[in-house]
View 1 (cartoon, rainbow, N blue to C red):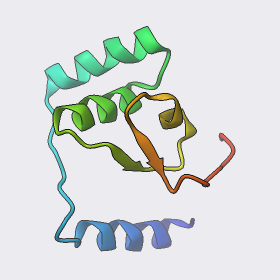
View 2 (tube, rainbow, N blue to C red):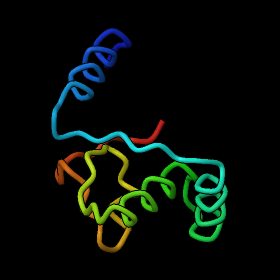
View 3 (cartoon, rainbow, N blue to C red):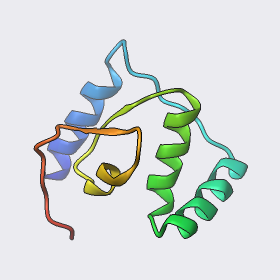
View 4 (tube, rainbow, N blue to C red):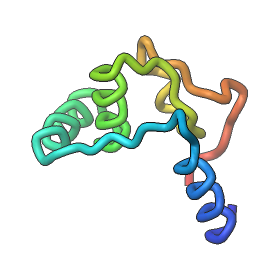
Length: 85
């Protein structure tokens, strides 16, 4: 997706009434970095998993297949497959 298209998508998503954007602090990032190291995962993925578990969220919209390996989390759309960059 080109940058203008991505910007439009972000604006549309952030305009949804049923979307919540959570803030995180330094301690959350440090915990995610440790979890990421332990699981050999990207710290941002680990941060998303920690926030999801904290808020009892079970579904994530992502093209990142690493989430398929996280127990208790379902990645949507389930048939999405993209190669890594």
